[in-house]
Image 1 (cartoon, rainbow, N blue to C red):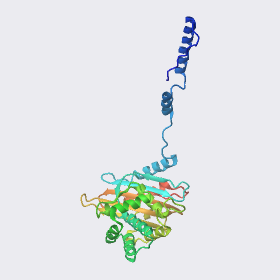
Image 2 (tube, rainbow, N blue to C red; image 1 turned 60 degrees about the vertical axis):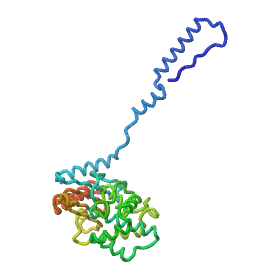
Image 3 (tube, rainbow, N blue to C red; image 1 turned 135 degrees about the vertical axis):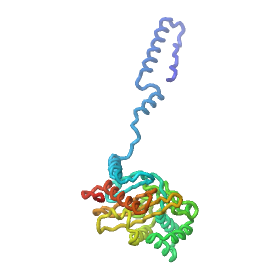
Amino acid sequence: MPDTPIWTHPRRGLRASALRVYAAGIAVAAALAACSPAGSPSQTQAVSARAAPPAPGPPREKQGRDAALARALAPLLPGGTTRLAVAVVDLDSADQEVASYRANELFDTASISKLGILAALLLQAQDEGRALTVSEREDAEEMIRTSDNHAANTLWQTIGEADSLDAAHHRLGLKATKGGPGTSWGLTQTTAHDQIQLLRTIFAPGPMTSRPPKGLAPASRAYIRRLMSQITDDQDWGISAARSPGSRWALKNGWNQRTTTGLWIINSVGHITVHSHHYLISVLSSGTPTLKPGITLIERTARAAIGAATTHTHPWPPEP
């Protein structure tokens, strides 16, 4: 605490007893000040810091959804080398909050990075004030509808490879996704949360902060949605297994067997409809020993995620 200034009477001859009384009064005042609840500024700050409530965590409803999702996934997880992450959002709910499981962990994209490549191509065309060329459209359609790798190689070079992909992702609000090295667009790394953000820029209705000139133009968004809804029949698997019978879907799957380990990367992202509710969902996995059980894991995970995120009165049942 600051030193208390010593007051002196201007007149000479002040008696010693009076000085002693004054000094005692000063001492009492100092002691009382020291005992005051206010204390010194530094003491007050310390008390306030100790009394401050902890930083707010996720909303209680989201915590409940995440816990429900973790419980639903527990019997599905095979253990061993397999890793899994999922995020889902109900576009028709009031808060559009995400239910997630390990959604900030990094995974290789395999062919789901083709969505990012197409988004980057469309952003570049928008900036140049032009439509896609005939050859670009042909490659884009083959890359998304049939997951053609040759078309992806061509467009990867057209956009400027990883640096341009990263710039496009940053522009669209993705935070952790990093383009693959050299020509290896399939080794782009991403998170389930980032894939939800990319899907939002494509599917979310209403005003968006990433609209032009920053984000995808309405025509660009519609073009990606159309291609994702025209996936060939042999690729109708993954998150589409969680949709209501007969409802619409739009997706992009990715799968790749790593030559170094023989294990599989299997991913599925997109939009599905369940009992008239519209969901965005991303399911990422790695380390699956074989392809078919890996696909089954993705589909069961998608069903569990929808069950955890649903807010309507007709919960989608888990797969028997």
